[in-house]
Image 1 (spheres, rainbow, N blue to C red):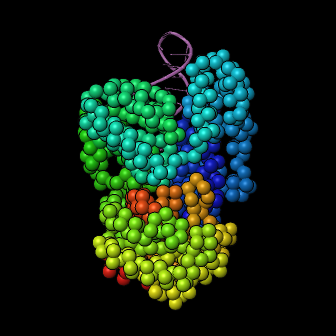
Image 2: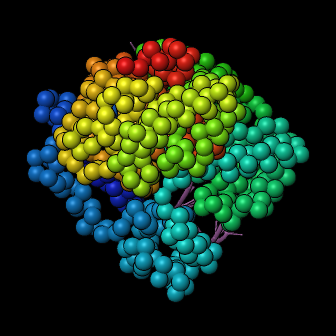
Image 3: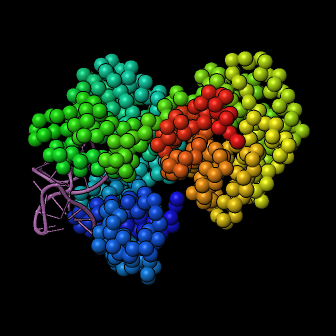
Length: 573
DNA sequence: GCCGTTTTCGGCCCGACTGTTTTCAGTCG
């Protein structure tokens, strides 16, 4: 659930953190940063917590003590935080945009403001291009050039990259590094290894006996646009696709420690180090130490083991609650990347897909699937040439014909039926009853109140013919936000009516989000992971839907298309 | 400003690389 107040306070505290850092205040910045993160990942509305239990209840939130709790109260009561206003008056500077420039940090922002009165990105660019930064004490020609390039990069790149779209390039680079003479092994780390929806950079770790050779190769690959750093154990470059990549070369003894450390996420590591410290150890990227003695480091497993913890898959390392003793002792057996037997959302050239039913079936079989469901659009989605009842019936006949030509895979009859503004469907119930799988989705009239949109989808769920809600929130990463809808309510009704919720695997959809998946699973809701394929190459995207499910703590049993065909069909209405 | 099964006071992650101020501060992850 997204709570506006939590978000607003989180942003404000993060900004206070940077402002204090600029001022050179010690330790408080981390405290505010911690509070900001905690509020942002909180499952409850902070306004509600305050209503119920006042300041005392706020102090129960991790990272929030008396001081910050009072500031939250001040904001709830007066709509402002005086401390924040005071700091902004002292430094009327657009901190976030300046900090986004590679190499520009708090201390430099302060210097730029004091010496040249620079407040924003435009002014920074002007002064840099006028060659006026090089005269500031502690800065030089190289710093000035780096800033100019950094601003250019910012202008053309912008947001984070969708993992599923960038992954082929990443895998190609990893393979090249693995192939260098002297490289024993190489792995992804960071957000790529955690299989996040989007990634801000690419981290690779390698073991090699000839580190400098690996580094020389890495910084001179044709994919590289610029080199930030080129050292014996660490190098950093900007790739032509518009994202930074870091490579570290390590020894075998500390590879597990480094993999753990650079996989993160940050908050998972902070918590892990706390646990290590309490047990009298020190944990860093080279290993787990007792004094100066190395206790563990070769594998991740032995590090978690020495900390009395179960190893856990990177996908669930968020620092939120996976290290809580209860959770860690009872980690779910997450769905595996080869657990899917079927795919229940596929478009063909009957509407906006690029390939025929037969081509899609053959491609699915090549991808190891046992069954697929053809779910072309329905009539109200005119731009796709959506089918009406008659055409849908014709397609059913066609599928039966094609089934004989592809005996190795079961082709189910389905549709992606439009949910109209009032929650009705644009295909007759009589026709829907003849389909194997009925998926429904919102494709227009996005702009409704949360209450109306929730009611609209609930009405569709209550239809006994409706099996699956496709891409339940409608968001497209980096393009458009989700429509307003109360997902908690949808999950309740899904449980009550036996409606399956989809995890759409298309890389920039990944809809539902992990937090909702986890909530749904706790409530006993079933999910399907579907590619939403529009051509024969899209089946590879199922991987990212599985990653999404794993980040939502889903097991094989929670996902209906991990079941054999007959059992899967029984799980539908 | 937060936190505590060593602490209600005294800690708070730390190592690599770069540029510049030639011995180290700033930035990044």
